[in-house]
Length: 466
Ligand code: TYD
Ligand code: MG
Image (cartoon, rainbow, N blue to C red; front, side, top):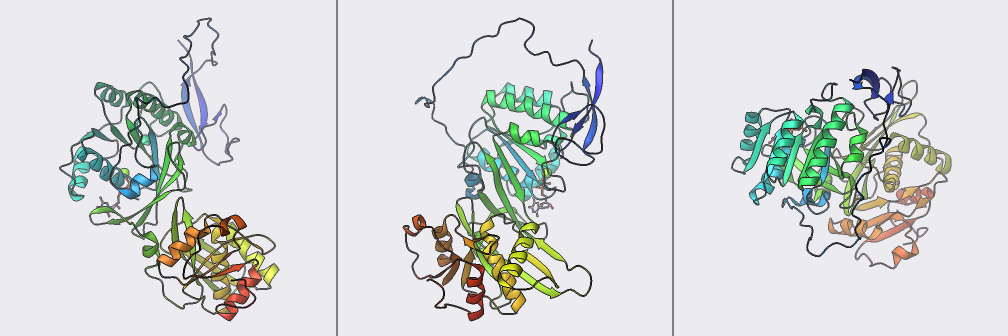
């Protein structure tokens, strides 16, 4: 019998260490090593001399007899994010903060699929069957033919999968599952990895599309296993601010579709409802003619999205002034402030600066730089930005404004929502060949100085190339 041995596994990246340390050498995370007992023995490799069976190699072309039928829920916001429906046999990891609505989203989706005649199984390791039933009743979905079970033992779940053909399976959550041959506790990297490995292998063989719910740690990583992200086909994040009712489903990785795609939902009394026009929603509470507010025309995946950027510049009474950001990158704000100071002579150093993306959305596109700069200049100078304008463009360290992708789609969305102008980065010549946007007055700015003078004069100026 093999000896068992204690090793220390990083709960963040999965690296295995022989001795305990305060910091993981592999990923730099502090306090992430946890003792796990494993059967020892060096890896044996292929050294036993037994010859394996050669593989059947096949061509790239899809065989005509087997077209892929994607499983479509009919919830457009959900289907778009999964790349147009679920592919049989795919493994999807859904991450998100506790209480954000992951279980609700998956229950609603499988109910929709079950109503279309697909065999759907929902396995909850966190809630009792009655709790899931109560939730379904609240969502008005109690009559959907979804098969429920409350279980955590992977061996039992595997037997269920093998017993009959399941089209869609939900494992809520992977951190509660355990494999009885592994000694460490549920939720540890070894357990999560082994459980996921077993289930993915089986569901791929049986052609079952599987959702794994994964918890997110406070710094936004799917808890424990980054390794899990490599094992699945698709990684989705469900995010949003708990104080707001909007929830955003975002694709981080997708082997069967585009990434950076988002679906927008609203959490209400009766569960999640789809928001098909999110720009209108994010701008619905905008006040016209206030200082420090500029509208950013962004792209989330294939979809344009308009968001209000809000800035506040306040005198700092003492000490180092605060810089606080919600929904954007703190380092990016520091950079824009430094560029505005060094290249345009606009002084923020004695002031506190607050920046907020209204509506609880998180923006990661560098294209938001120009809108942020406009909001900051407006807040500093106490002069409103023309409220019927949208902004986009990336700012470089010398203050130059760089072209961004898909300018026309951004402008079209702005025109659709009644905006009359755009202050945008100069488009590349290839982008100019595309369709003209009717009715929008477009100012192409090359430098933040151009933006500052446009804002000073409150509209069109001869210095800018329209
Ligand atoms: P849940 O799906 O349990 O979150 P997760 O699985 O991500 O932990 O969502 C729980 C929250 O959603 C809870 O705070 C209540 C809220 N909620 C509603 O507001 N309306 C509803 O119809 C439902 C089902 C939940
Ligand atoms: Mg849950």
